[in-house]
Length: 179
Image (tube, rainbow, N blue to C red; front, side):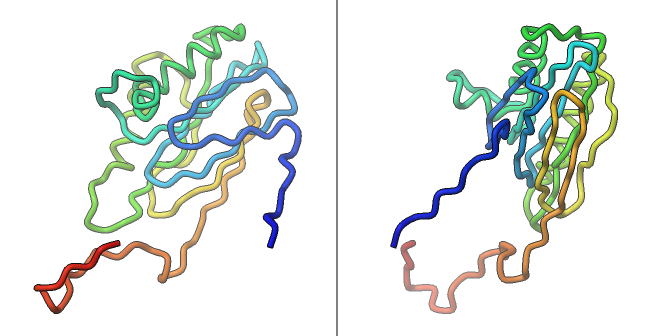
């Protein structure tokens, strides 16, 4: 059995957790899937540049680049600085925020914390917040056209079998199960 290969459409930029990308390509579309993570979609409409980040946690300590990219504080700075490098001006930046869902009962409200952090960052930095979609209990698939600012979001629905349930202790408490 051979693996199927799918061609990536020209101009498509897929982001995963901890990534940040900027571009001036008018054909580019950035995509990601979000749960409790947050993506900031930011652009300068005059310079015709834009970008997206995808972060896992609001703030934290990380000394190497791979770890620090997981945190919103670092990811937001990278996005802004990347856009400025492409000719954007800080006073013209506009941003939309997506993600920040609280998808599983009994876990921390990290999605809410991520969304609040991102909104506060924009306010503190004087970046115009133009909307988006944060919160709720569903994951999202996101497409962002960074030059035009167009965004398309699809909420993902999981079947009850795929939703994580809290672990229950085994009836036979003397046994050990390895996985």
